[in-house]
Image (tube, rainbow, N blue to C red; front, side):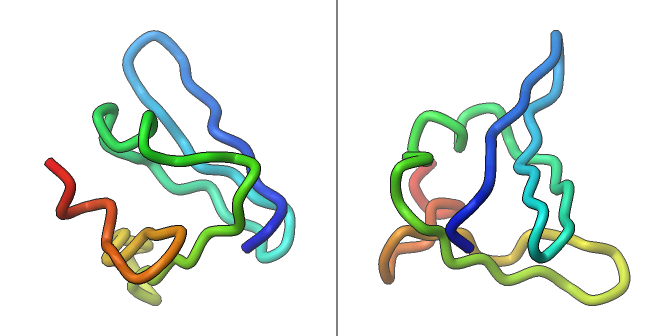
Length: 65
């Protein structure tokens, strides 16, 4: 995924993209690890849209915490 943005409100942080059209809630402590200048690799479940993997390379950012 190359075109996306990180959007936050008072209590939630989301990753939004237009292609594919996604809006995924992120853990607040993952957002600082995401560089919007780099493409992302993500893996989500089909039905519940649960985030399983998010990375700029091979290291899963979900494991950073």
